Picture 1 (cartoon, rainbow, N blue to C red):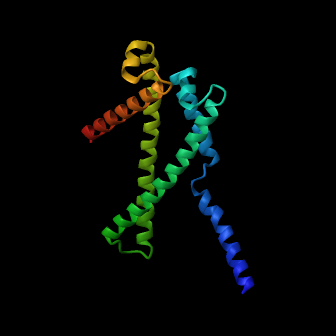
Picture 2 (picture 1 turned 135 degrees about the horizontal axis):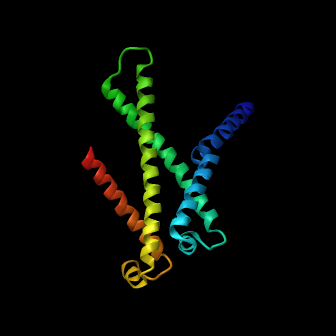
Picture 3 (picture 1 turned 60 degrees about the horizontal axis):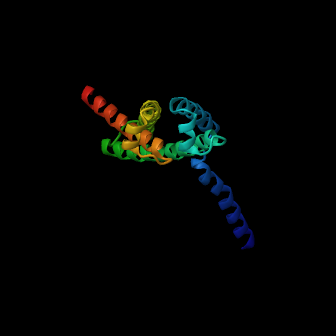
Amino acid sequence: MKKFLVAAALSVAAISPAVASAADPAPADFKNAAKYCKALKAASGSTSFATMFGTKKNAHGKCVSQTAKKTATEDAAQAKTAKSQAVEECRALKTEGSKNAFGKCVSEKAKAKKAAADKEDEAQEDDRINAAKSCKSAKKDSATFAAGFGTKKNAFGKCVSETAKRLAAERKAEETATA
């Protein structure tokens, strides 16, 4: 009985890290996050960038860490959602034919949905970088900027967030109009 319990405990211990690391950032996530943070810093300026992520000394590192973790978590969630939606769509189609028609259907649809989600993520990053550029320019007129976003430490971040949301809405409206 003891051997069985030890074997079960070892099995659980071996599986647990694999499950826990499903949303852990990969080296590529950190590399992509570093590129994104570098572009965001260039677009927003050093001082504004530091107010969004911390002191000048550690702002870039915090940006990279937060972005990589967020990306990994989003990717895991998007992959799970894409697969479950693909399963439902393939069930609705009642795939018949080859022995593995259902599996092929799910795989193809899940890949397509994940690719679409990745494309949207890239567009959102571009929106945020463009918003930072816009807010950097708007910040030069301090009276108007303060009236719209306040004078607290988070004013630049509020500007970037609101502007990025507006840009995303405009982009989606444009995509809908052209489709």
